[in-house]
Length: 107
Image 1 (cartoon, rainbow, N blue to C red):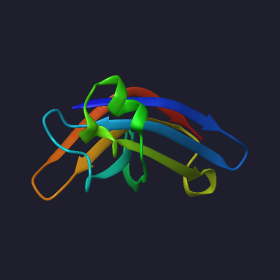
Image 2: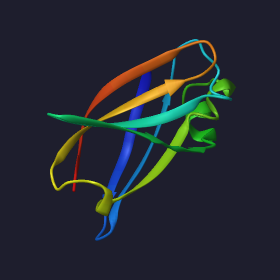
Image 3: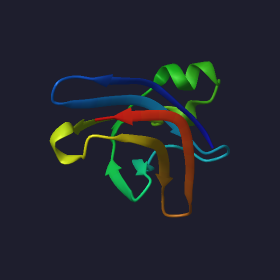
């Protein structure tokens, strides 16, 4: 699995997360991308909104990667003030793939 969290943009009401992810050898169309926030004693699974990313397809010279993009706005009010490790989960009818990134989301 390849993943790139390109930006984590906090504001006074929450955090917006942009990026892309795909599983090597799998088409991206039809995948569900979910973000995972992990703290010591809890974990949250959030549906990310899909974004078409022709730049990812062009960079990797693979037209099957156009649907690899995601964005998610996470409202600050729903989370305790703490730091969460950020993971990305890809799901489709055939498989699940997960990666825990080196990114941290703070509320």
